[in-house]
Figure 1 (cartoon, rainbow, N blue to C red):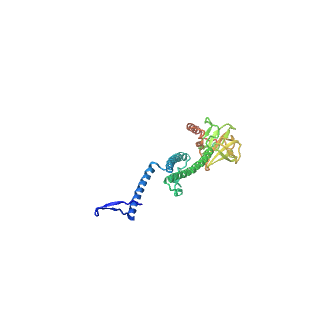
Figure 2: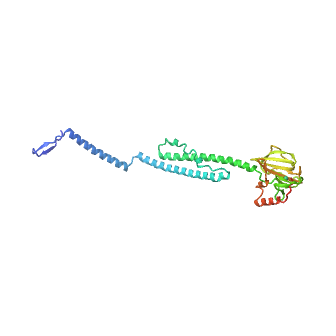
Figure 3: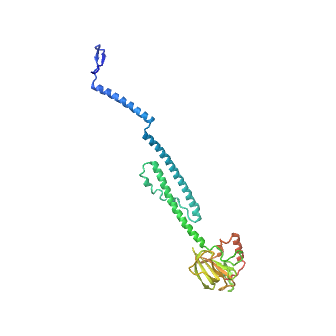
Amino acid sequence: MAKIRYTYNQETCKYEPIIVTPKAFGRKAMRFLSVCFLIGLAGSIYFHFKYPFLDETLQLEENAQLKAEWQVLNRQFTRSAEQLTSLEKNDDHNYRIILDLDPLSPTQREAGVGGREKESAGISYPIIKYVYDKAEKIKNRLDIETQSMQQLKEELQKKQKMWASRPAIQPINNKDLKQLHTIFGMRMHPTLGYIRPHNGLDFTAPMGSPVYATGDAVVMYTGFSTYGNVIYLDHGFGFETRYAHLTRYIVEPGQMIKRGQIIGYVGNTGVSAGPHLHYEVHYKNVPINPINFFQRDLSNKEYEKLIELGSQSTTSLD
Ligand SMILES: [Zn+2]
């Protein structure tokens, strides 16, 4: 049987039983439940911070690991970008200058850098998007630099071929510099007896002395003319050399020739005042002074000495 509670009524001066209505009971129950809920919530929060759940602990550790790895990755990208910048500077300020190429403009360097940013648009994590965009920019810069290096390689091969082909040595052995008899310019003709242009250099040498190709070339022509036995070499890039008054030649048209290769021998054929080699350099079909094409043979001092010795005679050997 339920226990009955009483309360003292001052008006009637009697103890009367307490009657609990359903509504009052409901209010009491709600207050009790609210207090229990608040106590439970406070306890849960306290224990959550003091003793995190295992899954959450593992997740925190994993996040810390990911953060550390992200930082390593980011630093590596930064270092790669710095190394690439150094390579680009060397390319623009050294390699391209040496090879007579213009440096790439900033516009060319940045070409396509922003072109793939849309691919990262779907990445929701800003921190990942940041690294992704950074990697994309490096990759695009690397593509441009790779193309530049390819261009440098092709230009270098072209220059090497040009340097090998360009006339750059004396056509006979002239170590003491005394073989140069007459230089380029207006000279007295030995048989005609008047002054006229002398389109080459005359080197005196004993009959049969070897004559050397002054650069890599293809033999254009061999034959006989007023210059006696002659050889014409095509060096490409607009250059041609001619060797005249030979006693004989040992090459034939179409043959590939290397610089320093013997192509014939000194003679006295054609209109000639004595055994010598008449040597000409033509650029784009115009005779030019061969004295400027002995870079491989002469120092500056020797060059000046050669000109002095070659200027002493005013008569060509033709
Ligand atoms: Zn001559």
